Image (cartoon, rainbow, N blue to C red):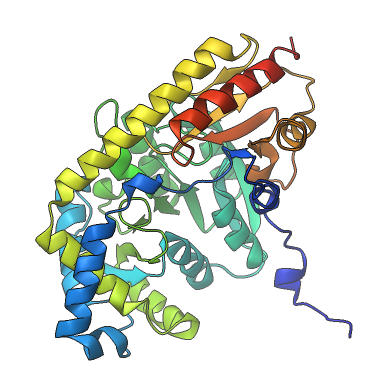
Length: 396
């Protein structure tokens, strides 16, 4: 049987990350390729206790169909949390629970974009979002990154060159894949550009709670007086990615359309998981839990950077993130980055992700690769970075 796939799907290719993860399934491989929370970051005992209580006290409520907008108590708790922590939530805003931040991103595209519409993105950017945008046959325009986030000069030119672009997609905190943080000045500038040119912003903040160095910065959404910013957050990095609970905050008119789109997708997100998240926020010390996560990732990041400082060749540069899960490494000009990544996993049993996986133009030339410090053990970090260090010294 010959299958004729839709135009939306036929052009999509498997994620390079997934392909490398297949190779890294070998137990001998040290994987720096994933983006998973640390195994010791999960509050397993609390989740088990909450699950038992819910299934004993209100099993039908946790197993029955529920509201598309989300579990009301969780929505209320998140409105309070996001306002107190990030200044997010104006009188015109509404919140909907989604099946992970990824669904919020996909539904935004579904609601706003027609085939051929333009989306402006940081370049490089998160592969999951880029593929969501591509699945709607949109035109992606990449804007280069600087040390303190997106180039606002290049962003304004991209907006001027694409006056009908639907929105700007940014990850201001500890960006995936670069680990960079957008400065306060640039956050203000990005919002002012959006106002000036009447273009929306999709602000993705999955890592904002994981700052372990420096000062917290206000979200772009906190500056929103016009209903221009769509804000997406998630429990994936603070409780559990497997529960698939995220949330989207935007102008109520936009959220009302997203509710309809979500009804077509999955009716509602997992209600048992939503109740678990709400009970954790209500009955456990969320601040202490997040503080513990910060200590875990601070230790792992510092360990990885100290080993890189010790073993990497001086001709290889890398970011020094203040939070999140990732470090972005840049090889010298002329080095075959894809071959470097393939050799690392096939010959040396260390998996990293080639930077070309994250470019707005699929497979575009780049000298970068991404490494993750949250998932490997300390011993794996020390051993794996020493191996990569030896590889980098062959390049200069």
